[in-house]
Length: 331
Image (cartoon, rainbow, N blue to C red; front, side, top):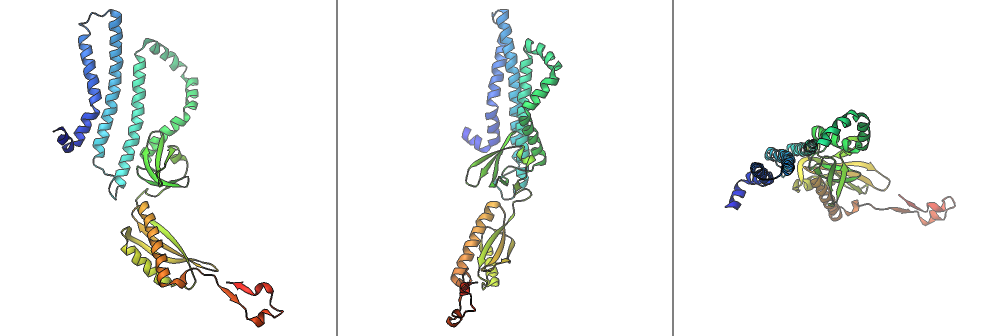
């Protein structure tokens, strides 16, 4: 029955699971606080127990706050799905919620720790002195914690401006991958060969990088072919259109072939095809390249790159007016 309830109401099951710990701690504190007046402890022991209950209550409130934030974030993100083709809006909200959630977690921990320390009388007394001399100490602490504060503020900027989002396709340090995780201090990028690159948050604020899915996932891929000058460009262009139309990766938007360069031995053909994602563009480029090469090998083998040598007649080779190095000329 419990398994059936979890399958029917997965969100409620998640709520019960994450609130199990705070609920148990709250019940323990309530029971201890209720039976403490009826015990025969000494005043000193009772004071220690009461102080421990106070510290546990402060920690419990911080725990409840972080748990409530996670429940609210999960409830909010249930409306969005990342496992669909058009997930731009979902990635936007997932990134905002996860980054802000981590930032708020740090704030809650610091506030909880501050209230816990203020329950001790020596800390409360020294606090006034510390605040009075906070000028020099603040400068020293600021210089020491500058990288942490920089990444912390960069996390807030990323959550608001969103130059990157969860599952974005990016190129960083000449490496291509997808944004896998965004914390309050660093970003984990899953590279194409399953390696992980860990990059500080400040990198995405201070340095340029490529984001292939900033607005949408559609991309145009380029395939370069080097063929002979006698290659039938129109026939290759028609074959490219046929290959794109029969491919499941092509999104039906861009397909084109142009002569992009002409050299002394070959001409350069640039084929453009479009797809809905970076991985689909890569696979489509490989598919187009393989099919075009196969097409040229089968039907137009003379269009493949060749080297020509022009031999002069024997009578011309014996002539004194012909330079010996010009007997065999490469074109």
